[in-house]
Image 1 (cartoon, rainbow, N blue to C red):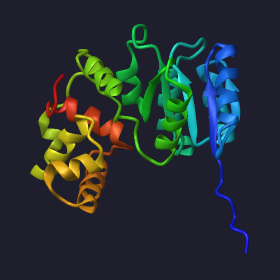
Image 2: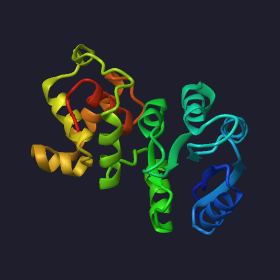
Image 3: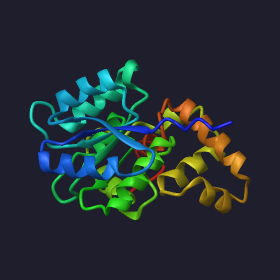
Image 4: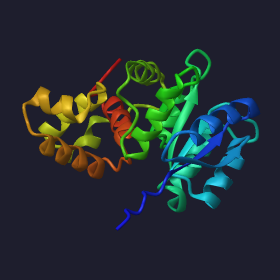
Length: 225
């Protein structure tokens, strides 16, 4: 009996530069297991296409006309009908001072626009699998940079009242950019135990993924740049 192939990961590309959209489309379409379901030239169009096509992943530029990528991300991730879509922000580190806000809006990670093609495809795979793109050192640098910004104000540590001491320890390690495997090694516990702690943190802090756990750790003062 022939196995039924898995459904391809459906990708929407949002960027106001047609040349970049075309380049991303060509790259994604030639990769096995990925397909492009649409292109948007601004944030408003990205929101509308996401509602219509329900992609798994949106590659989202920040600086776009009509509606920027942060507001588009907030609307996509904050609306129940499209909350299952994950957003990867595409940014230029020297110019875009809004990545922290994008993560707070619900983005599952971000990439620099000069990321090699293999890095972009790997990022789509990581985020589509349900993780957040937080492992690369550039990501830790970016999070640290935007965590320094005065807005939004840090939440008081009391917001972690329901979190156990061991869960706080795991949360701190997540904020350092450690993977589950690295956390298990660091704490000398099993992978299953780490996954249990991460799952409980997601539920207790009402976070959609590891990216928002990092934000919670910074805002509660468990981690500082």
